[in-house]
Image 1 (tube, rainbow, N blue to C red):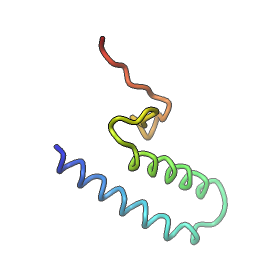
Image 2 (image 1 turned 90 degrees about the vertical axis):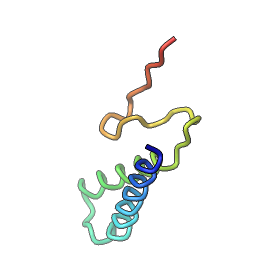
Image 3 (image 1 turned 30 degrees about the horizontal axis):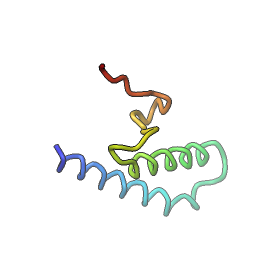
Image 4 (image 1 turned 60 degrees about the horizontal axis):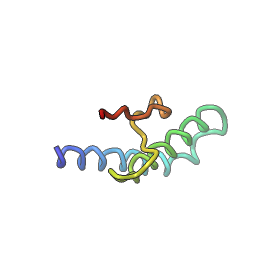
Length: 70
């Protein structure tokens, strides 16, 4: 499981860096703003640690919180 997560983080990081390189080619507008917002959210996702507070659990619904038992 750990190896699969590390591989997915690697793929995500590569795509994110590629988008950042090509961001200057995208004309200013709504699409560019959406891509910038997604890049910020993805950067937060890749930087978060298991013990961090305010973690991102879903990219599509960033307001989702974890429901813990107990």
